[in-house]
Length: 253
Image 1 (cartoon, helix red, strand yellow):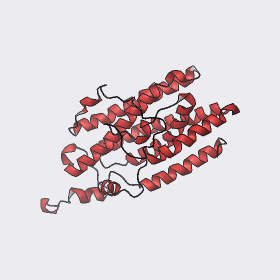
Image 2 (cartoon, rainbow, N blue to C red):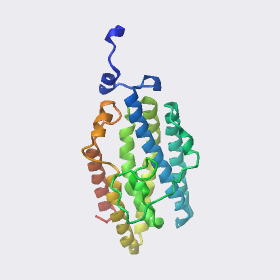
Image 3 (cartoon, helix red, strand yellow):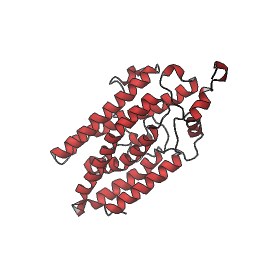
Image 4 (cartoon, rainbow, N blue to C red):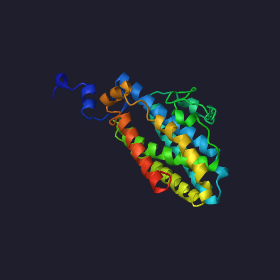
């Protein structure tokens, strides 16, 4: 193929092509990719900050170790993706411990899917945790959402980033499993059923909102660039199915 016949980058990406260096990325692609990475990094940092505050509420050493592992690994995941952002020229200095990742809105706030504050975390991570049971319930629900979203991101057309997401997916799946295991353990005492049910009722709509609009024009742009493949509506529908199955399994359907 001669240089005159070279396929335009946009067409190459639309057909499933992969990029491997920032130099080949068109400006609009760079912007969309940086937005995707910033949302992930900010969500991991905010999630880690929230769980760090709850570690000592764990009822035993094993539970505190599990919560500590979640915090450690989420920070590690953020650092890995942050390195890619730096390769694209992003100013990553603001992540050097100077941002208020622990800030939360009032518990009864209703942000929907709207961004809030000065970072790109998912709206669900602006709400405060209220004790150990609440944190475990949130982790179980959010864990299922994260695993679905990471499965989507692992297919991203920027290959070095896709490889990172693929590598951290099993660890995030384990975080979700720890949440489910924690719920089962809490529910051994039937006196905890009301508290667990209340937390699930609180977090379920807020986690659902993290999938965004089912009719997002933004998604179509990302799909064109190979940054996304599965619609928000389809991801949300699969998440609802998984949550329904979980609640039936633990007797809270």
